Image: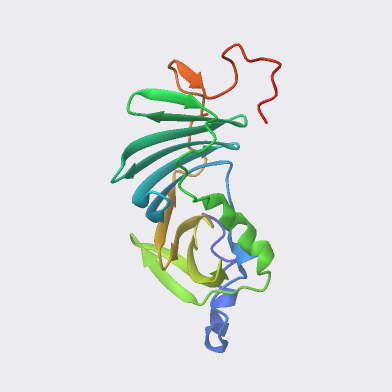
Length: 191
């Protein structure tokens, strides 16, 4: 940690409202991370754990309707529920949550500066507040690592961790059924 000298100069101007850098300068993302969502989904109140790796996603959704696993791998969607696996069903029990949407916030609000600072689990955070889908959202970004740590909205909380540590995601190792198609009706127009 030889960069102690770099960040001493900025601390003298805290009185004029500059709590820290604009979001675009303070936040960074990796291609792999885990996001844990708690809040309202299509399936009611749910807990969703999402593992991201290079565009592929593995989600576990726990709700009153039970537990579902959703794999999004190379543009295919696999849903595992109650021991059965379906490929690309038209109506998937999605969680409507994409923690990666937060990546665009820095571009949408290029002048967004921290509303303040806070600590989560003893780690110092910049606190950014912005409007998303008509709601106030709050993003906590680690002062030390620059990774997002948490995003809160009135209906949900997403915690981020394991940056750069998620293994590659592959499709489920089980017999998965494709919905529709097949059945000897090839060549007939379904519409």
